[in-house]
Amino acid sequence: MLSTLRPAVMLFVGLTVVVGIAYPLAMTGIAKVAFNDQAEGSLIVKDGKVVGSSLIGQSFSSPQFFWGRPSATGPMANNAVNSSGSNLGPTNASQLENVKARVEALKAADPSNTAAIPVDLVTASASGLDPEISLAAAYYQVPRIARERKMAETQVRALIEQFSQKPVMGLFGEPRVNVLQLNLALPQSK
Image 1 (cartoon, helix red, strand yellow):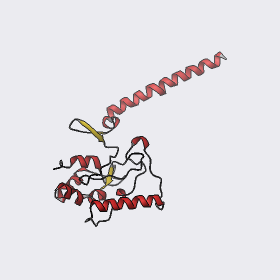
Image 2 (cartoon, rainbow, N blue to C red):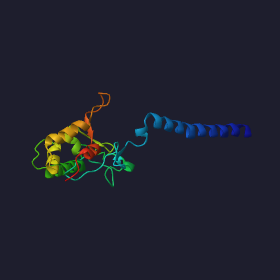
Image 3 (cartoon, helix red, strand yellow):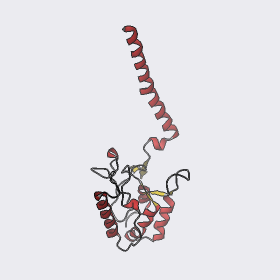
Image 4 (cartoon, one colour):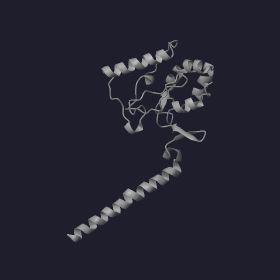
């Protein structure tokens, strides 16, 4: 029995060292060298203070800021620990009520805006953590933000264009903008 047990224990110890210690340390080291920003959480720093991550959405409710995609995480929005979608289908009564309430909130925030409301401003994503919105969603909010901040709409549009991101490798996804980075670029409130 000892002849069978000894190799099993040695194999267990050896694999624990390789797979549980050496491999994770090697991957962490490679990530820190090759992809340091991503390995550190893609943190956004302003005035020497971490204000968020470019990978996780944040909730903004003030009319002076761009609003991101709604979050389905609970009990609080954009909770990375509880990342999940609502899993509600397009004909689900709760989903329809949520979308209707979000449409009403957008119209109440900017009653003079008669443009079509982009779908990503009223529906939550699969992860519930989207840090980005479509360019259509950003442009939809331009009149409200320009009015609230007493800026020309052309200035707000220029910021969107400055911070817009192209599809990955020119193929995957659609043009988009990171809401936190865009809000940080807005001039300070007067």
